[in-house]
Length: 508
Image 1 (cartoon, rainbow, N blue to C red):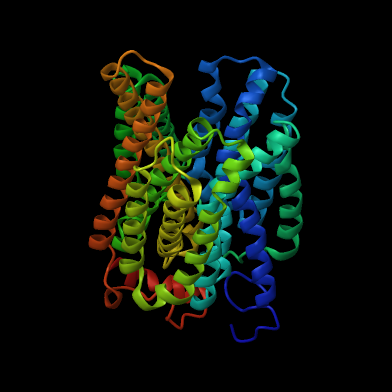
Image 2 (cartoon, rainbow, N blue to C red):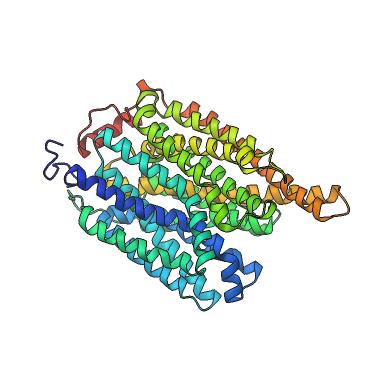
């Protein structure tokens, strides 16, 4: 940027630095709304079930309906932001998400609530990748980019835990419906910020077309993948429906990849995901998503069922983890990432997360928060804070700006699929462990049942530790050494065009 006091001359048309940071605040607010909505509603489920009268079997669809729409439409949402403009797509996503949230809050029946959750997921799929794409195209100076992604990565990692706190507070002090209504107020501030601070990139050349066959193939594949793992969570791994949908997902993904090789206007150019650094980044986000969703789920169960914490106390218990995550994200992007690169920072974070998960296996019914729960949560927070910003920044670095939206969507897709895989696998393993424990300890007294739950959580934590240990090895092997790729933070790139020029370097 030649002048910081006037409009920038890059392809994004983004004005002075102060405007860029306000744009970051706007997209961070939108990202927080989408991420926390995956957990905030969980806290409200018992109250919503009592109010609307749906069954335990139907209850899962409040969560699954959102996940299916969100996961299956992410790549389409990212590509639409490339085609119709990021500012316009961002505002549409905010308004749609707010409207769907208001509809859910006003639900008078189970069907109305599910319909609203599906709509939330669809507009979330439009909003989440667009928010990251706005960040990618707004911050092109490497040092500023690192700081921005540090903040954004911290929010992406901490949103789930913050959702537990907010959900507990709203449910306990107001009404379950406010877990949905709150999004309307967040969206209002987001729309105002987007109108004032987010600017549209200038399009050069003819408008590209949407890859309709590719969109249908990948949306169906992602739907099948998320549904397959969701079904495994409820019906188990012996279900024909589970394996049928997972097999269909595999076939559809292969068909999508083959189509992308010959499509004139590909939805997702394969060079984006086949680049070694970006592939490592996407896999790191997926693995950390699998482990992170698992720990929120089982630590929440443990605190509320085994230690009898209230929803608000449970949310407060996660606050130190959030603080460590934010601290680590800032230290990583401002100091460590520019010195060591993702090849060191991501495996380092994975190792810390592995240690934290192994630490959690020692919890029992007599554990105390300060001595037994707080230390592993803080270690895990620092680990995730070291993984997420480095991975997210690497995943979108060097991508042709025409495909910034769909590349950003791949980050969200990786996290969503990772969360689905992790939740389904860990839930199944934990349930099996609890059943086996009860079968081996008869009669099934209350004390035995309590120990069975503790045992099942420990099994889930061990498997979570295995996820992160695998992630440490994989990321250490896949990420290039610093001299082999484009520097994340010390390069003197100063314009969007420079980032486009860097794409061939990243692909080498």
